[in-house]
Image 1 (cartoon, rainbow, N blue to C red):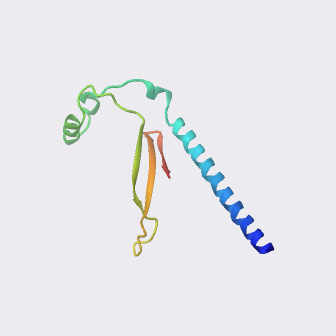
Image 2 (cartoon, one colour):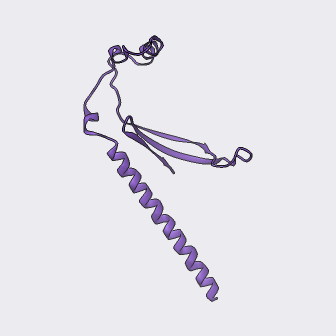
Image 3 (cartoon, helix red, strand yellow):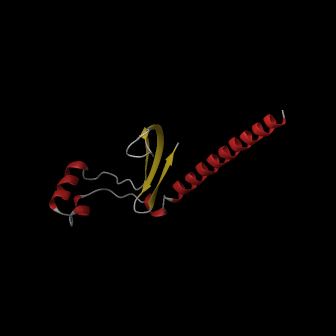
Length: 115
């Protein structure tokens, strides 16, 4: 009976520790995401071809097709994603379902949070 109580106590402590670790990790991710939004990113800037005028012609052509003149340039984006992820070897892929959120603010950095 004593071993059962000891085992359950250890398992309970491990679960509580993992829960607290996950909570702290999510809180730190949130803080890092907020730090990626610099004050100057709140200024509005609109796309014009003059922004890419010093780039090679294929790049200019791509942007001319991809982005309409006068489009608001987003400085910070959040992308929700889901799919499968494998952290295994080439011989054994072992895919697992995953959900993640990426907050990008180039050139300052990004936060990729796996849930």
